[in-house]
Image (cartoon, rainbow, N blue to C red; front, side, top):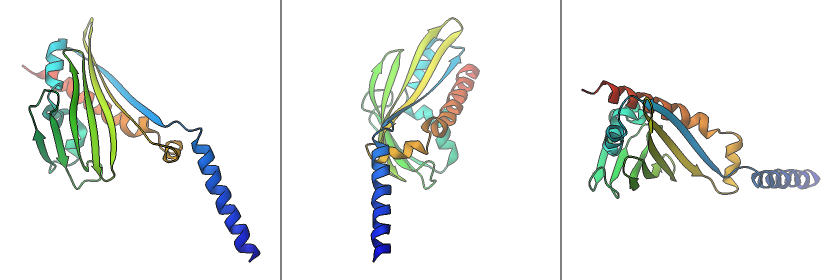
Length: 180
């Protein structure tokens, strides 16, 4: 009986430690990557404003070429929804909706992942005139409520998403700079 009491005490103490630690762990993240493309802002913005073009430069589509894509609305406009359905774990099932657009400057997206787990987050892409072309920034933002934010101690979202965003931007740069 003493052993069971000690074991319960240890379990309660560990749970309390995790819950208290989670109070001090960040709840939100933002992963941002940038590239400069040798093209005019209007050309770059026009290309990235169409979600279906992400199939060409974002790496997730390339992880599963058998992904089934769906669309609702008019691509390149607020309210357009691009969906995907894949059995590949890194692609999963979800949809992306254009929520806001500022011509030649910024596009905001709502991301709704359904599988392998349900998560909602946001993303945006910006374009900015530079002396030598257009700076494109792609960012993902999200969070996890307490106490689930404890996982941010073990998972660095910048390390998880950053390389994928950078590869997507590098692909975008190559596509736009080699267009005729």
